[in-house]
Amino acid sequence: MSSIRDDYIAPWWTYWLHNFPHVNLNFQPIDNTFTPQDQNYQQSLIFLGCVAAAGLGLNLLCLAIYLSCLCCCRKDEEEESKRPNSCCVTWSAVVAGLISCAAVGVGFYGNSETNDGVYQLTYSLYNANHTLGGVDNLVTNTMGSMESGLKQHLARLDEIFATRGDYVQTLRFMQQMADNVIKQLLGLPDWDTAKVDLAAIADQTAYVEYYRWLTYLLLLILDLVICLAACLGLAKQSRWLLTTMMVFGVLTLILSWASLGVDLATAVGTSDFCVIPDKFIMNQTKDLISSDIVHYYLYCSQTLPNPFQQSLTIFQRSLTTMQIQIQGLLQFAVPLFPTAERDLLGIQHLLNSSEASLHQLTALLDCRGLNKDYLDALIGVCYDGVEGLLYLCLFSILAICAFCAMLCAIPRAWTHIASRERDYDDIDEEDPFNPQARRMTTHNPNHATNVHSFCSYSSSMGSQSSLHPPAAQAGSNAPVSEYMNQSALFGGNQRYENVPLIGRGSPPPSVYTQQFRNRYSPSMRATYLSMTEDQIRHFGNDFQA
Image 1 (cartoon, rainbow, N blue to C red):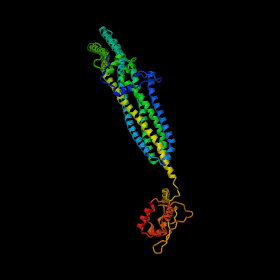
Image 2 (image 1 turned 135 degrees about the vertical axis):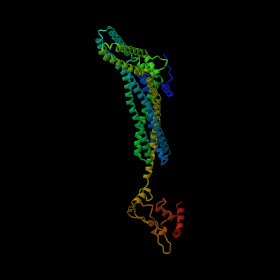
Image 3 (image 1 turned 60 degrees about the horizontal axis):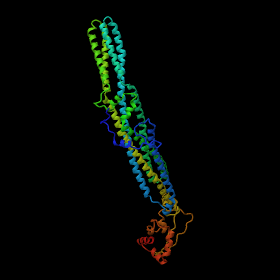
Image 4 (image 1 turned 180 degrees about the vertical axis):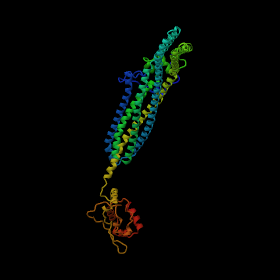
């Protein structure tokens, strides 16, 4: 019996997965033949899931060691630099975002491919179930009409033709032909059991596939949302958002490893079936259907004999013989027995219906219909299905890499944000040159108080004799905008309202006053106060430098 086929060749990735090591939980190698009922084979698939679980544990351990080292080295890093470099955090976030986007794209494609393959499988199963159901209905209806309808007509005709022995003999011969037809129909396989099994498999497969597709869709959306939220937290420097995304990142990392284990075990098991599918089908149906019939449908070669040809030929000949006998009775017996015409026409109609059922039965029993459904199911599972599972495995790997990078970047971002907040808290809130104080004064101008002028000013001929330090003003320690009010500094004189030292982030006025007195003599100070506005601007720049 030939088992070589040209209409189906397993793809290369199924052979690659089929050659994966098959080891049971006792670390003993086993045969890679697809035998899902065997306990050792089941353990070999569970072992692949355990490998993914071990990878998850190792991954979490590495992350824990990294976080521990980061916490231990935090003090040393703070001593070396007051503000840590954020370049590493930025690039880690960029890499995590790019890998996450690529993972989501691959995941959507793999999920769609797997769904298409499973849909093609269930569609083929339903078609095969419909074909087998049609065969079963035709056989049942034909047998019922032969056993009940034909028997009643022959019984009444036997009473009518009681006086004619030759006509009664013809009726006995027709009864023998009807029994022969029933015998041939009983010789056909019991398709009802196979039909129920196919329908149950198709329904269960469609049910599982729907929830599998929905689960992966939610996982893909979760990965995308976590990635976007983490990027938002880094941009806004929100510590609570980063903390929340870190928790969800660990959860998604666990889900990614779990999906990797399930997808890998499913892909390996399916590939074991796809490499030698005919052997598994024949082993599953050996107690239900003859191996010749299964082989005929699996390969559907012109060189293979039709196992139903003999039964269908006897069926056809028996019907033809009965129709010839009915035609003779209608021609010769009806003129003598007019009451027999009704039953003879009823038998003729029954035989015509049986002949139509015979033609339909011949078409349904032909191997081409079921073989096409079988090949479509194989292509759907072994090409689209296994390919989609490989893409889902790639999605899981990329998601693991992306979330590992994200989990490494978030603690450094946390440190960077904490360092900036610490530097910001070190600034004296009462310092009038604090940017925060300037913003407070800008938004609350009534809260600001006037500051004494940088120098006291009196002149009779456009000159000034001395500079005086500003006097402390009781009850006024609130910051003012733009470091100092220029009008207050120079006594409201318009000549000094645009002094370049003002509004440039300079030290407090008291520092300038002390440096001014230490550096310049009274005559030089008088010369400074008699300068023009442009000369003062140039002098201030040199002084600040």
